[in-house]
Length: 358
Image (cartoon, rainbow, N blue to C red; front, top):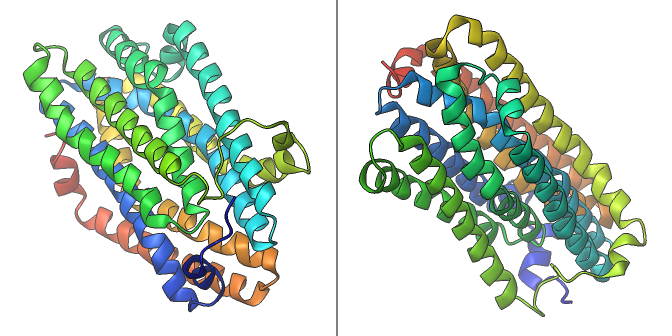
């Protein structure tokens, strides 16, 4: 396994804090912005059907789909944090084993989740707020394709974006997300309105999502294969993945990131259940509002993902002053952007919602 290049070492250790933040965070933010856009595109194209039931079905399945993010955050954020700390302390071997543990752990937990979601799909959809007869069947169909069949693709491509970014390769890490997002936007209308017959638009949206995430995963697989011998990241199974405190290091960082996403999605599911009594139109409206709110949420998440390797590396290398400066600068930028989004959403709420539903 290879040491960091001179350019990557300069980025982590010497480049001014703001410049280093921008170099790692901007590609990450761009990738997350594409995630927002393709989520909005899904809702936009489903909204063209004029069916509140279809919009509600997508809304109901959103927490189930985002549970995959909780899994990938557990191993991806945890694995990237562990890799950055090991690289900062000069432990290249352990960094490689950490990436291997993260990959195989993520795959195993995702497969278990997808299996359970498929076996108990009717109960799962009802718990998420899809008990209405007009919504239930649509939501189950979307869940089967986007989550049960495509869940592993979604979870692993997010995981690899974290792990590749941990080596300072933020552009390569974000490019996979961008490829998946752009392809999803392109495939949505093709599957929904050209290939599949009327009434099957939701299945078309689910197929577009699954295939775009598969394409992103293929991109990351090619990157890893081409980088063999040049990257610290390793996906080979090795019993040393379980030694030297590697699982503990990953879970220490990954569990808080996982819980944050998990609790967020549980709150969405509870809200969807509460809105059921008000009808599918109200549930559809909540779903649109959630998608719009994702702009601020995903941008700040992109900032956090971008600076995580910087913070972990400088913490492990003992440069606490640089670490604190990076933390404070990124926090201030994130808070200012969030406040700007809050103001914009309040002022332009009618126009923003009107893009998706009338």
